[in-house]
Length: 391
Image 1 (cartoon, rainbow, N blue to C red):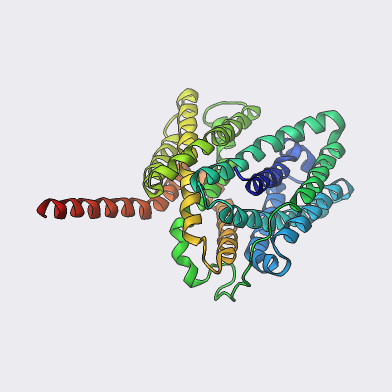
Image 2 (image 1 turned 135 degrees about the vertical axis):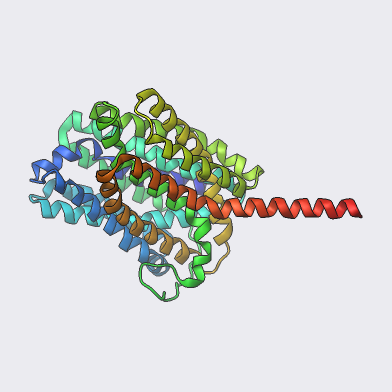
């Protein structure tokens, strides 16, 4: 792995670790601020809105400041956000900081994704597998670090750790290479990619699925395994940790597979299997069966994501408006996440099985373009073989 790409991976781990740092104590912490149970979603919504707005305009900011300066400034602000958390004395102040954290995260993630595309032109499948696994590593490291810091010195120590991590990441950002940026053109509809860029939506679909499935699981899984399977709330985290570990360990290797086999075929199979396994979640009331299905789905996901990231990177690399494409689709993903934040709990209140079916159907829908391409490619090869036989 080249050094610049390794730096990008480390910074991606830092961003995602910061996101998960306060997860272990978040419900208790928010109730201390006076949030009701129903109001616990407000800080999450404010975070998503901040990410959505910043991702949408990230290309303009990166073009203005350069990718290196953008990352340095983002992580400095990240450090300041965590330094300010212990100072707020009201729920509204916490929500405002959460929004600002989302703004900083959104810009930095777009910048890091853009860098990963440019720096992965050789062995792209393998490198994208490593880049994809850095999200899972960050999700494992963040809550673990947050829990340890909280046990050692309370919330102040936990927030201080986040601030120090942001400061160190700002220093490391000075070592990223500068890449050429093209000022983005004005879009037709705000929050949506330009019509000329919508042709890349199928290729970006797996990245949307990554976020949609993970976010849906965060809302549905705790409810399902406690109410339907009878597990304790403290055991829910084991599912997310297991999934993150599987992804982090396997993706560098499954990414190599995407360099050797047509990634479209991997996506056609893996997205279809994910859809099937997720739908099956809702028809089991047995803990062992559900856990087995969940672990297998996590395994399939580890094959899907590197192939999806490679397909998208191959499609947009070299495009003069690459950064704007990454930015606009990132904003679209956050907007869809907001829709899920309303839709998924409403579906679950109607029927748990219906919720799993809808999440599975989203995966199945994203598989359709790749299934069609795989079938078309097979038909073309078969026709070519027939023609060769005639000759």
